[in-house]
Length: 141
Image (cartoon, rainbow, N blue to C red; front, side, top):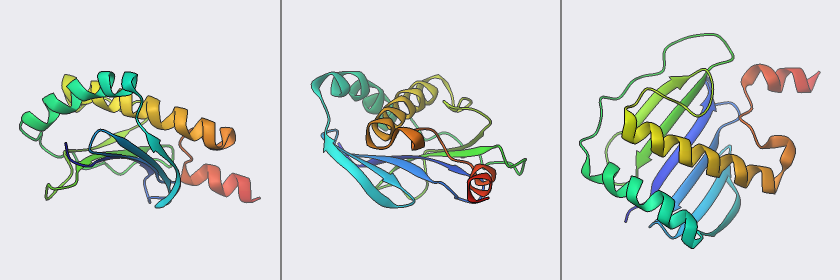
């Protein structure tokens, strides 16, 4: 199994949070490109995610949906396989988990979003949810 990255970010990549699964064995959580935690996947996580990744790796890549311009509250969600030229999924979302990439990818995005949020909550509860650009500006004041 190859490396897969799930990322959610604000429209301008501010507050980017990502989950990288290496070989369906090891998990890394990144914030703004920096690794904030890493660990091996549990047996239950492998059982839950394995079939979804297996189906996704065999399925033809969906048409990439480029995030549309919108208000500051929107998110861009990306799912990429390391050895492929472009991301499998890139969609705009007003809320998480992202929907609209088809039943298989929507289920995978939901599982990955849940896992990322759980890991971020364990690392720093205040930062467990996606931070949007306008929220960062509010915190700076």
